[in-house]
Length: 369
View 1 (cartoon, one colour):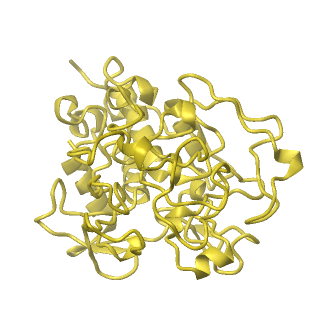
View 2: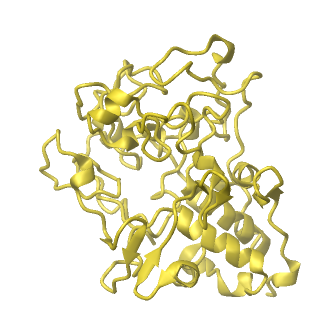
């Protein structure tokens, strides 16, 4: 069977209002078509920790087989789309996640590997990741990592590498990047390693910039608009943690920023999208051209999407903490810090019962294959 050659593949759609970067919204929504957005746009608060803006108070209505267009919290990652969730890096087989196992410990399923007997009040950030840091935005290559020598890097790093390589037109993409028998509709791990090292390798290290505008003007080497990090005035007090919008009080309490909501004030409220979703959507957009009968354009129809989001032992989300308002997706972490969230009918945030069912652990669920 002849696969399309480099000259047969489509050009990536671009956004002229975003430095002609790929149109990530279009690419993501091809793989993850959204529910209908409210007429005025996504709901938003008047300020961090504030009230719901009455002009933007309508929430979207779930639609079968489609995805939440107004996304505010990582707590919903791994949940069924009808519940407002999106797949986690584990669900999308992201090879550089190296997620912690699921043993009902704090940080389960995150990149921080806390001990199984860690106390409930442990600072999850203090638990190690599977990588050797060599400074800010730098990791050392190591041969003893499972799957890849690169270790954990954020998904915007391989996203930038794949984008650049595809746009170069210098690769025999369909014949060299994919092997359906071993990686389905994903780029082979050794090929992805090669692209990342070619773009960000510096000797025995991977060095990268954050996915922001440098100086507020020029895209960094990993720029990804849909993180919507550090927007003003919401983040003017140094309270935000990357794309996570903590109030000043929560930030000063030292709570792990992952528990804070994504952008939820202003015109970009609810529009954050995980870079690992952009990566898998880009992989699927390319793979659909190479193997259209095996790799459908929609993620739920793809091999990864089969059985996704079943409540209980198959759910890959992180056990959440108590929030200031357990019925509000834009709420802040409760003070004082309390892990885990109680879950149940009085909380939209999943607790241990929702995520584990009757099981004490979820063995093997974090494995990449």
